[in-house]
Image (cartoon, rainbow, N blue to C red; front, top):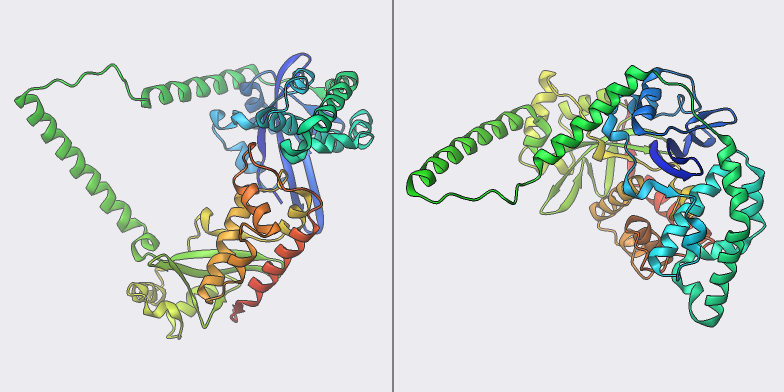
Length: 428
């Protein structure tokens, strides 16, 4: 399950076009994947500024029901520029397939083939689905360089290159035909362009000037030292203000939110000498169905492992006098549903951030219970450990895990089930 909407750039016949891609996400029991567009049209724009203008226009499209759409609408224009890894040159694919099968070339080709395959599925483009379904040798690209070693490997690579050379024009034609560009307000485009230019200028100003020379001299050094001291005092003052305002940061204990197949829960966690300590006891994590229920629990005298933390008394006082607010930072929100199915689909389709956070939570919970089972299951020698490590640290020079991923998916499901048994739901 992916919770984001990703800006991407596609190199097509008419030039580069910018659009949005929503990797797989779930709503209840339904699973979706979409691009910016409406019905049979995939919307593409010749510049990021035009894309931004459309997003802000409020025009209906297939992504408006996505959970992250409102977040996208509120982004700054420069934040909608595609990351380097989200730029796909479709026109250059035949040339890419004619190069030697180095790890870098294979990784680039795999990325482009994957996004094209997804476009074909989402937009129901028969030419593309036939291209992939009728040519299973294309799957060899997803497993890295090992399929292209030696004479047989060279022949396989040549066959793939020949196939792409003959059939790729049909693929490009199908995508060209589905891409349309809605009209956008010229003033809104100008505003977005100005934002992008301003952001670029600010970034340039932030870069250090290598040509600046330091002027030596006692008076100058003294003045600089005084100025530096003043600046440091100001920074210290700022830090003090931040610490005063950040209650949870000052006590060193964090509220966390856990979303499982059974529902949404809240709890607390801190680290003592890098060891995780949850609101719980005997390896069980106390969880609550609402922030209010958690606050009421914290106001009472209850026995749990966080009671031994020196700053916990401050939390209890705040909960008692009604001033406590349960604020959960994004890095402390853990979403487990959907990962089992996503692992079955392979490392290229998974939401890396969601997986990273889930691994952190499951590992911390096991450590809290003095249980090595998670560490062992995610060890580098296990199929699941290899899968997770590759998904979180992709490297074209490494051998990618090979499909099918049913065993890895089931191993992850078992870890999730074991984690859920560690949760002790308290009454609201």
